[in-house]
Amino acid sequence: METNKYKILVIQGLHEKGLEMLEKRSDIEYKVLMSDDEKEILKASEDVHGITVRTANITNNIIENAQNLLVVSRHGVGYDSINLKALNKKKIPLTIAAHSNMISVSEQAMFFLLALNKNIFYYDKFTRDGDWSNRWDVKAWDLAGKNILVIGFGRIGSNVVKRALAFDMNVFVSDPYIDNKIITKSGAITVSDVNEILPKMDAVTIHCPKNKETTNLFTIQEFNKMKQTSFIINCARGGILNENDLYEALVHKRIAGAGLDVFDEEPAPSSNPLFTLSNVILSPHIAGVTVESTIRMATETVKNVFDVIDKKINKDVVVNKNEIGL
Image 1 (tube, helix red, strand yellow):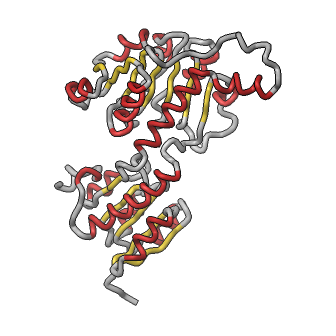
Image 2: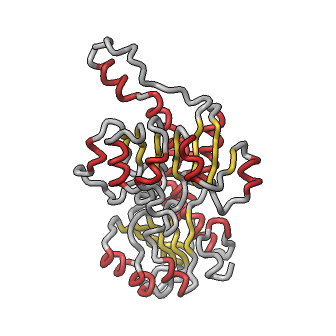
Image 3: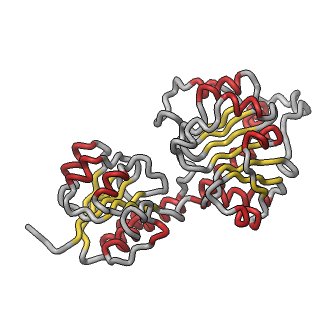
């Protein structure tokens, strides 16, 4: 039976706060598909006007098959699983929950930084073992006065800068797409040549998108330039750090440690060589996932769908604004 309602496909679910928003609108009907299988998504999306999606691939086939599609709304900020070219061809906007996880990811980066510098797992283990004989074998560092390089000064990177400055760190930023005056105004120092500054850095944290320019941004060449006492953190995307080279750098103590939330292959298999190392702290791509950010992601994701339907589109959250004429 045909209705005049807008049909929304919710792929992989939403927090109940987001579903409540959908339920309150009388001109909306929605269905939830807890699957990332392309065939199932193809069938479920045939007649929909909007798609919300977490990590499932939204392929060319899905986009071409969804004849009524008006918007794809990402539950998060990364969109490497979405076929942007296919959306651009049909002038369909891709929106992101732009403000949902910037606090959460920046806090996770700081957690990695603190845990690595304070060598928390080393001290935790011998405390639990009841053997304090190594108590004065000092393996912890202060953050104050140390140099940190933040790669990427977007919503997340700029929040990391703010937090690192609060710990009295000397903060350096590399982002060729941001006006140097904006970076300087934040209290950070702009960097034009990463390779030149690396030997002076005590920590590097990655907060840039993954693309042709940033894939393998850090290889053995870059690790060899870093201090042997330095740490590297990646809460952005797998592949920005070359995992094989990172393993070699850590094994041979070219750098002191790493904090990783993202990996080349996800879910990362337990056979990943990095998992055998004690100087690596890991999390399963959940830096941006907290109770609060999950609610923000769901509600922003749904609001972005509403804004497109209501023709009140917010250009700030549209990824492909130039391609669709915004």
